[in-house]
Length: 230
Image (cartoon, rainbow, N blue to C red; front, side, top):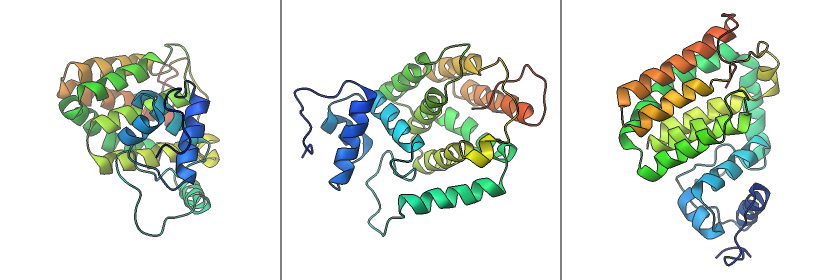
């Protein structure tokens, strides 16, 4: 069932894709990512951007898995999820968030270089291609890091990273970020992409580590040349 979606004329904009996703969710049919893309008739890359937009706007729960069916148990409401996230955000700090990302993402990048399918690596490359060297865009940055997490084929690691990334944009966290610098982190992403695409796992791990360490230094009052927050 495609919940009223015209498969002969699939959506061709992010807004149309988000409306199609919400239409399926309203009918209780929110399948795994691959099936969802097929039902709507769009690429997984466009689907992920639409899902990221919906999560950022709190229009779908951040806990919705990318690769698995929804839990059969009693789901938390969106309001409960938002309240829980806000409570945690008020008790943690930007530096703590990046310390956790340092524990997760270098290994995620290493696994992505080893396990990522050609299509998933293409998705990482495509996500990076949306970015501009001199402009930081929150949506594009989230899309890039989440694409790497998907390619790691570790569902739990991807889930945990997504929770940390969502916390980053809580108001209580954002107001405690230092002033932004001219460095966007694009050059680090470029190195990460090259290592993952070349299946150089150790280099991908090291590049992601250096990327996150640079941001952590900035958060802790490092030199002005360190990258802006992701």
